[in-house]
Amino acid sequence: MSQYRRPRAARYGTALVALLTALVMLTVTNGAGADDGGGDRHRSGNWSSWQYDATGTRFNDQERRLTPASVDGLGLKWAFGHAKVPGVYLGSQPAVADGTLYVGGAEGTFHAMDAKTGAARWTFDVAPVAGAHSTTNPDPVRSSPAVEGNTVYFGDNRGYLYALDRRNGTLRWSLKLDNHPLAQITSSPLVHDGRVYVGVSSKESGATFDLTYPCCTFRGSVVAVNAWTGQLEWRHWTSPEPQQVGTWPNGANRYEPSGVAVWSSPVLDRASNTIYVGTGQNYTGAAGDTDSVLALNARTGAVRWRTQETFPDTFTVACGTPGADAYCPSKADGTDHDWDFGASANVFSIGNRRVVGIGQKNGVYHVYDALTGAKVWDRAVVANPNTKGGSSGIQWGTSYDGNRLYVATWFANPGTLYALDPATGAIIWQKESPADGCQWGGAAAYPQLCQRAFTPAVTATRGLVYEGGADGKMRVFSAATGAVLWQYDVVRDFTTVNGVPAHGTALSGGGGAVVADGMLYVQAAYYPQYPSDSGGVLLAFSLP
Image (cartoon, rainbow, N blue to C red; front, side, top):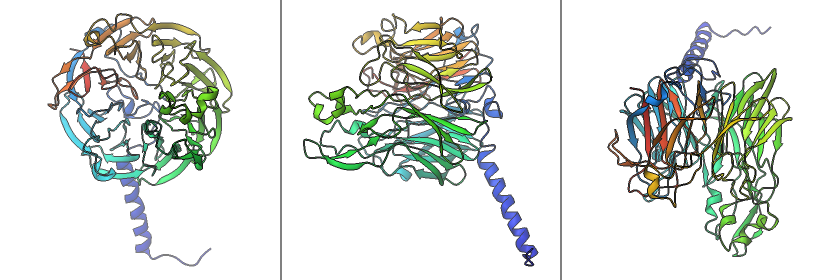
């Protein structure tokens, strides 16, 4: 035993520092790492993350005011207008915690407002952190926030992750997750055990509209960041580092492999401390964790298992550009699918077996053993998926209420909402996007733009399923039968609490409906953009 003993003051000072540090951490997180079933964030007044809970159910089991008997009484309570920014659409799903709503904006802004009235509380501008906005094309905040304790976390379209004091909008820390100039964060954070987990995606596929672009050098990743300090703790790259392999026909440099963006939000199995997330397709080459589901050790990022559903799958927007076949080599052998995993997963149990379910853009819902990755069952809800672009499949996310899985398809001619048996994948009921959806409301004036498609992630409460469409209708369905119990046309002008002119369009993808304390919140700010000089709108509905 060492004979050296620190002076009493030093010993007490160290202990005091440790105590103060612990108190600061407690203030910042106020229980960061609470999982499904734990903490105040699961009372009916809170929907504090994209997933609702760590397992990704998107099911508010605490909601009591909205029921199959009462939902027909929903009416618009307030509207918040987003600025009109050409080419920008919003997918930031709100988070609601302790009476405050948090949401991303169209001009690189992030807002906090009273959840009941829409009154402004504070606004944060990412420009001083992420660099000055372009005056002609500011970037939106598409990532949906996660609230833990006194901190709200979100990402932006420039690849930064932020932690703000949720009481006043003060920046606690920010971290650029990838130095690639086209990196962005569409994934929404998952906070667990003092870490923030998020995927890194990219706008580089769209850059190939310009065929002179030296495609492609981005590679996706999943990261874990210290929730208190903002320091990167681990990263799992989903693709090898791109290398120059020659040039494109026009002489631009060509790199391979690239891509494998992570668009979706991670989920967690608390018992095994495992993170699950889906991945994207290659942009060039054919390598990496493409079109895969990853199971990662939440503490270290080590791969516990991976399963790959489609390979190869190499796609950029050049693949859909007329006359650009030379810039899409995968087109020659038909492997330009874009059948990646843009949706988040659901973790649930079949008897005593823990499983992970996730929808793919080819229209298949897959279920795997959570510990081993072994396939349990598949259900193809799209018989003949669109061969390119993945637009007919399962786009953003699904819901699980303990009895059924709820899965919606996008441009599947028509988009359809399904209730599946979680044990077998058998279809319990299915409901097509209503045939008259393009024949009434604001979309009826634009039949060439209106389509029968379900865009957002699906949401559920007891007895109810919430899903919006490209026809500009927000609907609530019976969880038992699929019958439409309530619907509202959003393609109209709105008077807003912030005085910004607003006109609803398609219900927003990237997220879905949020239900908290008897209120329903939806973003109507997606494409197709029904013609308007105004921006999209965030809508809040309540019972009388």
